[in-house]
Length: 457
Image 1 (cartoon, rainbow, N blue to C red):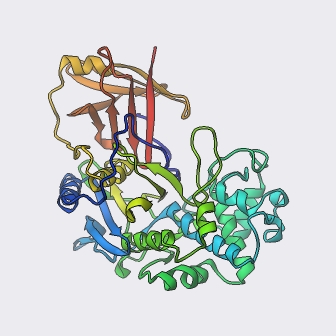
Image 2: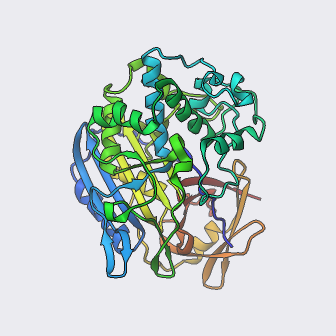
Image 3: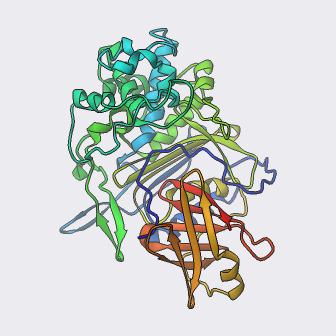
């Protein structure tokens, strides 16, 4: 079996460019709408994605499109539309962070307040601050690890899962992503307001900004224009089970639309939700030596430009979502996805490259004849130390295959421009241009991940 990432919730926060060129032209580019239409038509007609996208310039919608279906019934497929609600997973976290910063702005507590004030039954809470939770520097173990996603748990059981393991490191000394941080921040919101997170979301964000269909979710109700989720398998979209969203709480329990999420970002960065000081704090986080992470939203760079922005991604079950904002151009982007057979991280950056008029080509899924030189340039072993991953690429007859160390080989198809795909698992391998006849690295795209691997002896 090929390398298949366990679905996790990671910030899309690192630059994907290997060579930067200066681009200061104002975005969006004049032909952006036509090229975005081409991109999403390709993804739709080739069965690579189902979902919705919205791009805003300031508060105004610049581009919006929905492709695919929200439900399959005995009488046929039910198309999604611009009002279809999608589960957004960890894109919930920026909403939760905003509510926390609002409470800080109101001087209800400070970022240095101890968690024990709000969750007294947790032994490690006295050494953990609100700041630690926001920036994932608390050391809290992730309560979702090993949890049955189909079994609904109450608050006591969820806290017990966190309390059952010790802190992974001394708070404030390292950064490690953990859903427990934001689940607990939800409990902080409820304790200080004596209300529910859903009520506070409505009061503090939904009503203030004018969001139409954003709330904490429950069981999926397709008749109410809520989307089910699908996986493309054997030439057709296959329905996937709905995870118990209530367990995600303030870490991943919101349902929304791409329109609402893009409007939320525009409101956040225009100063309508939190103070300038809090926004600066939210976008600046722990420096792990390779990049500075945010506290609720993290930085990213657009390939082929020197433009930077802030983003977050999320996933719950087979649903995915990504959001991003580029302050320089007042541009916000939101993607909601309920079915994909192509890396969603890749779609996210393709949209940004179109908006910024870079020369990144649109994807193609038509097999291209593989030359001997191309096969020889990519063949070899590649590794990622950060992910503990090693993949060998080799030619087998007239075809190519990849093999993750310790796993069975998997076929990869050449589609041109140094790109190979493994359709069944929605994997894209994009190789760097050869140096002295050999590609020095490739990037593996799958789900919400983009992992660089470097050639090794």
